[in-house]
Image (tube, rainbow, N blue to C red):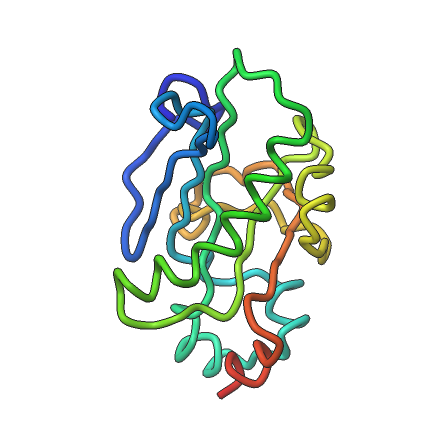
Length: 167
């Protein structure tokens, strides 16, 4: 991840889960990696779409995970691999997360820098686009400059996700 992903690799805090993207034909040679981590604290379009109050978000943010990284290794040329990997990881991450942390998530989120990517892989994997971030990052409160706005994608992991997230 550090070498090939444009954002590099940084140690994330809180809950996290990473897995290799592998082929059934040659499982010993990874095709890429998907990494999920704790959700972003406050995203206007996501919070409004869920119907969260500040109290709801504080109480149940841990039920949302962020697809912090998706990497297909640069020498891999398999058509639709990114969207297939996103769909399969969304299907699998709930059980993996529950086995590791003892609870099942209700929603996945991710952010796409539209100056670099078009989000087609997320759309093809049935993730929903909610809008754009304000461009802030985790260090926004320290006065550091804003990052570029990113498109917000979500993927519900259960049909009653809103009821679960609202409590």
